[in-house]
Image (tube, rainbow, N blue to C red; front, side, top):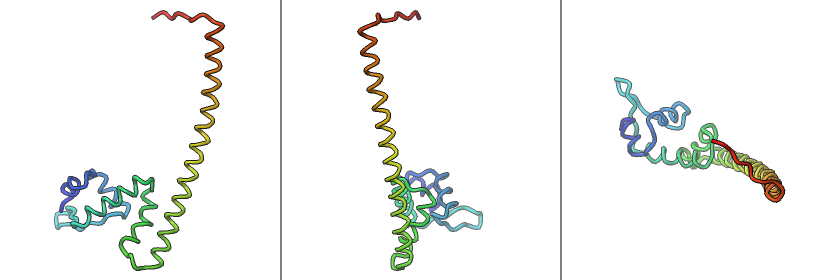
Length: 131
């Protein structure tokens, strides 16, 4: 199938499909006129690539994970994939910890602002702003 058909069947733009190919995540054959042609299996592969992107993986990490799908019986490939996925999970855990710290710092500021607003409302008259 040509790139437009793959795009329709997967909901992924032709530009993204070309990017996947540039990154080595997806392969195609070329016609004599240079048009890309994809196998039917490309639909499932694009779906998997989207799932991995949605899980927060970069194209570099996805490229290290996909060989496990391509060569499922190779122990070395399975070990490399396991290491890559574990490393990615650890990165996500660190990102989550940082986000929690950021949220907690924001909560402190919100509480301080709430106290300040409460103090202002009891001591000052509202300021009328002209338009």
